[in-house]
Length: 313
Image (cartoon, rainbow, N blue to C red):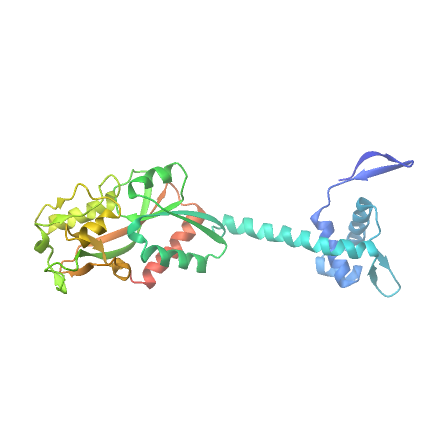
């Protein structure tokens, strides 16, 4: 659309927004050096190409193309315009591809919350797989307490969470991502530390080092359920919190049930012993709020394939 905006030196000056179709037409003519071949590439009539080039030149107030007897050549002004024109068209096409990818859930930022138990193996493998399969998705990952996940999801401060299974409000959805075994962690100087396999009942009289339920409800419930299934109620260390848990275990103050994947990152002076059958499990869920947005849906698909490839379920 052209509109009058003023008068300069006795003539009417016009102004308009540059349209992408005019820029694409100019690029086609400049690269093919022919109005006819450009029209064929663009699948339009040659007259339409000529009209669009004239409109573009009128808007810019310069001559971009010069016809010769054999071909179409760029003027000095046309050569200057060509490089910028290529960048503008490329940027517009890139923006279109990205917004379409975002609509399919293949681009954007995934705000991923996770808990401490997933740090040693589950989360790194998930992020690596997401980066590999969805390179245009930026992963914004943050470690949180399991108890904080419902609020983070419901207030739209994260999109997806990975944490030990816990009871969540009805509006939340979850899908199992991994199930791994719990093991007994105790001091390497403990008389039981040399065992290859241990029955959970063997530590029923020990003090259990475990973060409070109001910090890690899913993990807490899994440990208590394992002890109850073994026929006893665990005695909790009420002073356990944060990294003091590891220090207490190393000093022989108590024991803990820990997910098996921590073995490669086990702190010094702590032994990890496999439990006898039936081995108590720890299930991790992928958790999200309300409906599946395209980005969440695609991320869940990647997570499901990872779980299958790693035999996590």
